[in-house]
Length: 323
Ligand SMILES: [Mg+2]
Image (cartoon, rainbow, N blue to C red):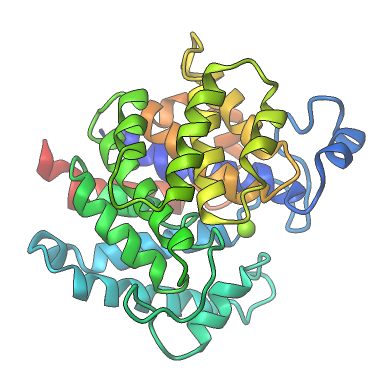
């Protein structure tokens, strides 16, 4: 289980770092620059090589907010947990004045956090269905292992702090619930199918999740299948692309091959490569654990030591209890 805790946070960061240099490139431009299969490992981007972006920074903020509220979470009081998450996001916002820490942060997150108000489902701050709520939500699944309904509810509220459209916050609940299942040991296909049937989901997210499951069974090349799901700039598309990439390679014999191929597929397309990489990396990391992440990707990853420390802290606070 500790291997899966580390796998999620390291998987998010690895996917983010692989996708960051090509976030704003079209698929044809990626191929011209990096070859017919696109990127096959870290390439140097605007922040260097193997550098994380806002997706990982905000994921770590989510983890910190949850760790501080661990005792509240155990009591079932989500209200104060969400306050703690909001506080952690405001701390992240304060780091964004430092040019070295500014890694193309999402404008919706910046504007929402600067407003001085905390968004909720009942009192949305905007109508954004951007993927900024989905890409940072993974630790919610770690805080509530084997409790997908509670993880869904908290994931929704976590995303609604900054994103006011149901297509921005419901897929975040769905990803948190999916990771809650996987970290507790549920099988990938089973966990995805359960979330695709969740009653609270909006029609768009449900449709895209089911489409992702169908496409994973088919033989369309990954970049074409991903294009059929969208570009991942919205929450529902980012979730569906991440799910597709995890499922497509789930049958691969070796786990390291499965993680590598799935995460590479999730960044090599015309859309929001670092966020879709973070989503796919988190799902595959949850399912396969840290041991499935290629060692060369881990060796070079920015912030690896703190990611492992936070993952172990979350395992101690939330995972060890459920054993
Ligand atoms: Mg980013």
